Length: 383
Image (cartoon, rainbow, N blue to C red; front, side, top):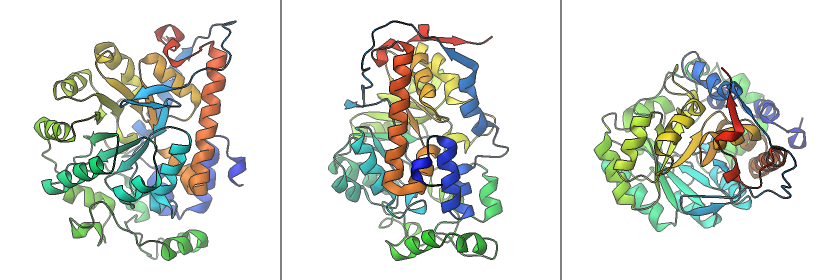
């Protein structure tokens, strides 16, 4: 199996599983606790149906939309994802270049293995920086300032990771950052010689954006879970979020909003967008899926905020359903990380082309000339 054989989520996942050592594959693949929410994120799309109109003379549909003040060529973009060098040695640089080629947002995690400045130098496309509030507030300020200076277009603050979720697959596989060879993982790494060669012959593994502010960014002998629990501020509150919004002073989203009440408070502190997200089912197991909440939140605040559905996307039809329910755009993580693992920049480009083609084809089949025509009349929920 190779990249040309990858036509959907399952194909990219299978190829990534062949290329990655087991602990790293399962870090992408897993969720919290019993993974009920992880599964629900995608299953929820099956509880409603699209309703097409025929003979609509669609021609070539317009897939573009405006998000964070930037026009993007299709209504889906790459979610912020940490430590992308674990999956391919080019890491965020590959993802940023692929996103630019398709005219959509690349998102950078605080916990990236490339710097804000490195990404800015390789991509002129739209860029979003994802912020975590650290206990050391100077780290937070530094990340905001550098993102502004480097020309990032927007910022989001992740608010659902005050402590790390219970990701039991990581406990079982002994996942650490950077990876350590143990008796448990040695065979898995030995079976992936290409990954091992690339890992040890390219740039040193570090959390590049915080490496100069804390030794935890360069000397990580513990798991990512322990890093989150040690470094992130578990007492973060609405005042802290408002401080970040005002300091950034530009397009800003809260990532991890799941309730109507919190969406309204996001407006009150000056946010221009929210990302309806449960962190890919990796935090609070048993919580609602993002798609479960899109309609209610859109009905309440859709005229005041851009709404991004983050999580569970596997198909172009999922994107269409999210937009019909009231989302402005969608973002995804697992699928593009499997694509990155499968083939670096070419893998992500292959995935984005697949998704573009699916969305385009399904817009024609729906009888919709542009994304605005995907409204509540195009979606019927099963009773």
